[in-house]
Structure formats: C-alpha cells, structure tokens
Length: 470
Image 1 (cartoon, rainbow, N blue to C red):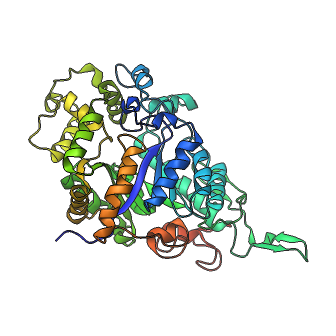
Image 2 (cartoon, rainbow, N blue to C red):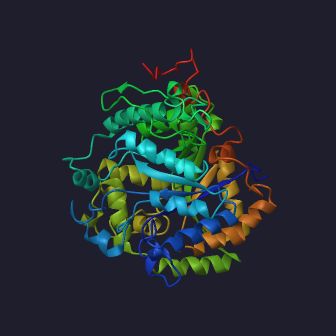
C-alpha cells in the first residue's frame, strides 16, 4: 500500500531566466524572461497559494558560472542566460506577501558576503511585513567569481566557511532571540514610552570573525528567527544542517542515494540532541504532468527540443568546479579520472546503473530541472511516483523545479495536487499562523532543543543560555 504520509511541496524558482532548465526560455509559452517584472512574481504567488503549496523557495547565486571552456570564461553562461542576468531575491517577497495570505517564502541568502548585523535587520523586516511567513535558506557561497568580485583573492576553504557560518548564526540568534525581551515594546501613550530600555540588551558579541556590541535594531517579529533552511550536501554541510536547520533541501538523483542522505541527516540530528523527525527534508524534483501519460510524454519531448547543451554544461561545470568543455560529448565519465567526476558518476549511477554516463548524457539529465529526478506522466502516474519516493526514502516532500514557467506549476496545481488531495496525502487547506506554525503545527518560535532557543532571555537563570548580555 502506498505511503499515506502527508507530502510537502515547495515551488523552486530564482530571480533569473530559466533557473535550472537552460535554453527553455526560448519556448514560446515560457515566461521566465519576465523575471524582472513584478506581475510575473505576483501571478506565480497567487497560483501557488491556489494550489496550497507550502512555500516558494527562491534560489540565488552571487557570481557567474565561468568554469566551462576555461576558468574565468562566462561567455557560455551569458549567451544561454544560465542564471545570469540574476536579480536580488529579497525584494520579491513583500509584494508577493501582499497578494497572498498563507504562502511561505524561502529566501536564499549567502552569509559569506554580508555582515550579520545589517542582515538580521533585513530578516526581521521581512518577517514583520509577511506576518511571519519568511524562511532563510542559509548558504555559504561556492563560486570563485563571486568571491573575486567582493574583493577576495579566492573562495574561503570549504570547512572554514562553516566555522564562519557557525559564528554568523551565533550573532543572528543573539540579535533576534536575545536582544529584546518579550514585553519590551510597551506603546504606552499615557507615559510616553514606546519601548522599555531595561528589557532591550546589547549582545556584546566578541568572536573570531565578528564584533557586535549593540542591540538589535528591530522590535521582535512574529517568528523572531525565520524558519531555517539549509542545503549543504557535504559531510560538514549536513552536520551544520543537523544542528541548525528546520528544513533541509537536497538534490539526490535516485531513491537509493536519497534514502542514504535522509538517514544520515536524521542520524546527525539525533546525535545533536534533536528529534530527527522535527526536520523536514525536501528533495529537488521536476514533474511534467499531463491529462494522460501520452500527453505528458509529448510535452516532455517538446520541452527537450529547447534544452541548451552549452547552458547545461555551464551549470554542471559551475556546480562541480570541473570544466566539462575540455571533453567530447561522447566521452564516458567513468574513464575520466578525477575525484569530482567520479563522485558525480557514483551519484548518477544510482539513478540508472545501466546507462552509459557520457558528458552528453549528464547534460541531458541536467537540462530540465537540474540534478534532481524528472517525473513525467499523468496526475495518477506522478502521484504514484511521489508516494513511492516518500515511502522508500523517508523524505518529507519536494522542491519542484520547472521546465516552462508558469506552465509547469499550473499543471501541478490543476492536475497533480487534486489527485494528491483525493488520496489524502496533501492538505485541503492551510493551517493558520506563521510559516513555522503551518509547517510544524506548534508555536511561532524556535523551541528547545534547537540551539537558537537557548539564546532567549529567561531560558536559564533569566540571562539566556548563551550569556547574551555578558
């Protein structure tokens, strides 16, 4: 019997052309080239809320995919609009929140290039304006081009970036959770006191990377700390997720690999003293849905004719750091002896062990929706597949990428979601409250044993477990 667990769904988009489907911007029904127009995002938000999506997960990257055809050469990415041009994601959220009531918004924001003091103010502002419907996807930037344009000679070492991230979160928790006590805002017109200074505290942070002596600039927002997402795939990244994340985004191409990844994250969460079921794990997936299997297959074949081979290799080269331009399309990956390529071969072989994984085959896989699996079929067929992924891997839900927008999402809303609802595995309506309340059914705030809850005043000895006011 298929799994009857509730399936969670986010839409996956980016403030750019085509996102993870390079070349599809040329499709006559694609609207992704309108990413710079507010109407594009308002229409998308309304559509997703109509379909009861949990949220819109907005990716971001600071830099150009310039590894393909020679390090520092961004021509292919520019030609194919491979995530360039790309606008800032933060400005999108407030207007989308204005036309929706329940849809959550996952903001991808790198902590590598912005100081936590002003960034914490951005988070609080968004949480206020959305009435608590914002999440933060915590990333450490990986593109060398981004680091160079900020003034660094090179990207910081991978593990060192997570040392930096740990302290960054330390500062953010102190500002959002510990600086302002509950009840600090009085709005007492008779006495002429808006806020009580005795209940607002400097955080006095002095660490290896940051010195932040003062108070948080914002009064407490509905969630204080937004829902925390994380997408690190490395061992250190998964450890960071197990410690901090409430939702984890992964991109496993097969059930075998996803099951292993999900189990690893839940094991690490338990070792960190957290309930492993308290973390929601989403896998990247793309669903091409039709009225029938035949219609969906025809749609897929139509979409495939627009995929840019050059754009796909620009993406893969940027993601892996390997210049795939140096290889022929028919070269078999398993005979290319580099550690990074062999890791990619190992991952994709779990998706199709009988396939001869050439450079061209890898580009073909990535061409629609990126590294995640592609599901093609009627609503019944795709619903069967999603339920089997949940049952066999223990994943909680999916971040759905698109081939053609908004068409891919409209097909999901109008065809797939009613089928999932009919089966009792997708919500009929939203819970009330903040994004955290909608996702987890509890209160709006971080709760113990999440480490962020320890920074709240009154947790221990009325000072805060992390000595915020020390």
